[in-house]
Length: 145
Ligand code: HEC
Picture (cartoon, protein in one colour):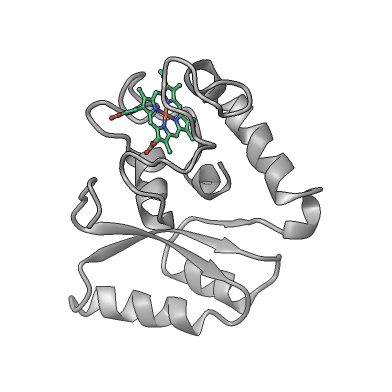
């Protein structure tokens, strides 16, 4: 159970080809059978048919090509530092005035959905979503922190 509810749920949809799953989600939302909003489409490379579907449906989209980054961990750390997460969680994520992010203890849960929502939305107590008003990180970057 996620501690940070949002209604309708906002979806970030990943595409690596023709985007048939994306199209199904678009159709189900349009038909009122899925209470969700497609907020962003993330494509694994440029020129995908899936991206054309996103454009046609008016969904913002971005290309994140794994080959553009030396390693997932390095890119995640770069974004972590650039967004100022280190100010509270420490440069290596070992904690400071905020809890460590590198130990096995998770206050809200360690599943992808919970972590995405925490970083994207914050909670009453949680930065960066609420403490400084607007998150200092762009929606298409939430997954890579
Ligand atoms: C202004 C200080 C501050 C900044 C900046 C900040 N956080 Fe936090 N963060 C906190 C605090 C305080 C908590 C604990 C909240 C609670 O217990 O409710 C927390 C909790 C978390 C948690 C949950 C940890 C757990 O054990 O469940 C995650 C994940 C997290 N932050 C990620 C981030 C990321 C990623 C960034 C940068 C994009 C960031 N935080 C920036 C203060 C901050």
